[in-house]
Amino acid sequence: MNSIIKSLLKIVIIIGAGIFLTACSTKKVEKVTIVIPNPPEEPRLFYIDSYHGGSNFSENKAIDLFIGKEGTRASGNLFKPYGVTAYGDNLMYVSDTAVGVVFKFDLKNKKVSFIGDKSEGRLGMPIGVATDADGNIYASDAKQKKVFGYAPDGKLIFAIGKKNELKRPTGLAVNSKLQRLYVVDTKAHNIKVYSLTDGKELFLFGKRGDEAGEFNFPTNIAIDRRNGNIVVSDTQNFRVQIFDKDGEFIHKFGKIGDLPGMFARPKGIGVDTEGHIYVADAAFNQIQIFDQKGRLLLFFGGHGGQPGTFRQVAGLYVDQNDKVYIVDGISGVVQVYQYVSKKWKEAHPREYKKLKEYKPKKKETDLKKTKQVPLNIEEQFPKDEKLKKNMLKF
Image (cartoon, rainbow, N blue to C red):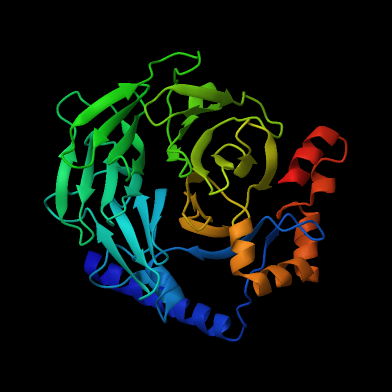
């Protein structure tokens, strides 16, 4: 009887999906354009695309979302993603805490595969994910209290985490020049540093507290490629801390609050090639961008299920070309943006000119009125001249 019910249910779903597909096929899918901040301001970022999983590359995207595909995990789509990283221009890795694997997005060949789904090095609850210069992948497993290293083909290289060594490994960052792997141990309130060559612990820094250099449930970490400095989301101290490559404290900024420049639940963090620090706040569903002194330069986002908004921001990563990858955990998607750096402008003069000349369509103007897309600087801070000046310098 159960098998009959399941078969009937599947038929109903397929019919429903077919109706949905037919309805969708009559509508032209428009490319979403988001320029941040809104014109006529100088463009700082623009939206590239969103990635859900296998449905991005399937001819039958809608039906895959309903019934999945044989031979893949569920529908081949993200369910509850958290961490994100990228290697080169075409590979993106996303950890999924619910599915229990790292999704490998091959953007060039348009396919999705998995890391950590084999018996050796099988993941339980992957959180952080990082890559090194050779394309090896590293994933922290909060359930098994380990960090696994994989070759580009997914074969296990090593596993870090003897008994009682790690309490809850989360955020990861790699310094390939120094051959170091930085691991945020959230419940131990410290950062542990390992050798990439043999997986041995080199040193650790931090302890529980609220003084400079101390942590209270830190979560995410990133490396400033310019100098090797480390930036950490000190989540329950509601701040960001900056250290040098050896864990020596440099600077901290932030405090609890719901005003621009403050934090409630800072999670994902990244640094672009010009040193700007990006912080994802899971409480506000916003991305705030700061300079090295902690001065707010720009923010965008807000609660919503469309590009430019989020329902639960988590991990964040900025690659060597200043692409910004933002994980939306509840929506099961990674949104990708491009920071309009000086280097990008010089390499893309035509695209930059189009951004400067871009004028939002009526539909986008209507969205702006509902505050579901970023407002321009004058609208964000009509009375705060200090913040406005900082943002205009960005």
